[in-house]
Length: 298
Image (cartoon, rainbow, N blue to C red):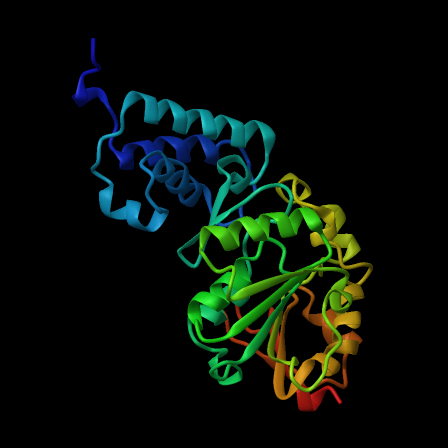
């Protein structure tokens, strides 16, 4: 016998049921969702094959018994494993754009995404310009940049071959294989030798920057991600020192490099007191992402 439709939950009811379970489980958020309600929306919307944003317009839609059961099963997996939801679903959303996600790379997230989408970086991206996503990981920032500026060429590199496999899958998903070129290697070693014709107008970089003390205190959700993509050494600046040291060789004369440093503002100021960084305004404030113009690196 078919279930009585009046007994089946709406999407809104399913979201609230899932959120209640998540809230009771003392989970940590920050991998594409800010709280239990956001993750519940993500879990339930997946059952209807809708993006979380679009699902908000379908809150009265009735779920099948199977869709409700699947939502609750995913919720229990999230609670029991403490893994980021993106790994469980195999998908993450960044600025409304879907990306394949797996434990081979960190979950797509970066404050830089806001600056790409709101047009803040366009002054450094001339028509037919060249951009580089250094430490690309899953490829999400390179893809957002290519989607926002279809007339530029984007290079993207990473030291992790498993992460680049995820990036390649995301390039296929968004049909950007001709606009974005992937390179494998340790930071600058991944790239061809710079000369006048191949330097970059803009380099974006969300590198590993978590200091050792903070790494040790991270919740289980972050320990599910590759440590290689998070750990930045004692003061979080190990890779950033290498990035800034060689950036001038790879930037065009009027180019700039944009670096995310998260909560390491004080460590950055201490490590680079001489650099006149431009601190970019994002939703989390103005101490997480900085821009350095090529002329200020020489």
